[in-house]
Image 1: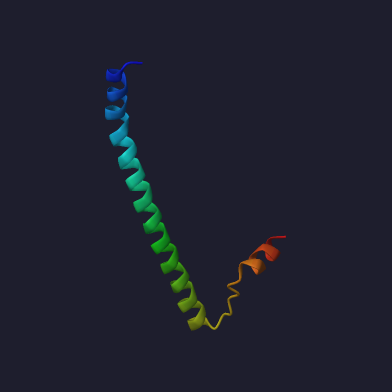
Image 2: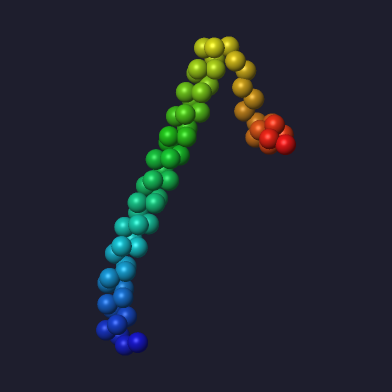
Length: 65
């Protein structure tokens, strides 16, 4: 594989990989924000309804067993 082949490979694949990585990081940030908003909404609704929610992860694992 010559230097021209290597340059062609980087040029053709480098930009799409960079764009893909940028979009994945951006999507991950948005999913984190969405998850936080859903948790806050869940707490507000539960408070309004008077329902007690156990927020520990261990109880969820025990309930699944």
